[in-house]
Length: 171
Image 1 (cartoon, rainbow, N blue to C red):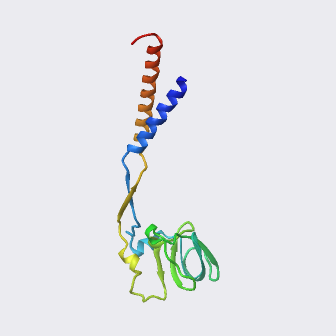
Image 2: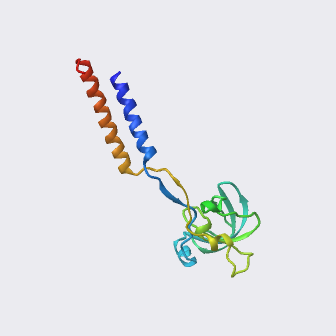
Image 3: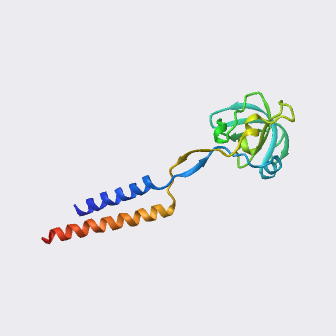
């Protein structure tokens, strides 16, 4: 019975810490790098035609290679979200793009530009992408967890001490 009460108190204390810990801000897509910086950070830069778009990625047939180990005619499968709010990109089948990628992934801020668009015009979402705060997600930091564990241990100790005292006949 004591162990059960101790467990309930400990779980309640840890749960309380998670619930009341401060939420860290979450940022929507932020494209702070210049085109030059994006190109420098990319593992691969290719120009190619999109042959397939799925919810998780895109397949691009390589027309030319500016950087990386791909070859003309290769088909690259790259991970990408379709949502520009999460720094993805809305690729269209049949369209040609200049695509930067790193570790097999690409997106709005990696450096994607549709080739058929005028050279001087940037994609509107790329030009206007900036750091925008959105609803915070709730992730407790390590000190909140340590504090919660300490509170749980203290609360459990108080419960055990109170039960012992009650068992001895003390008021």
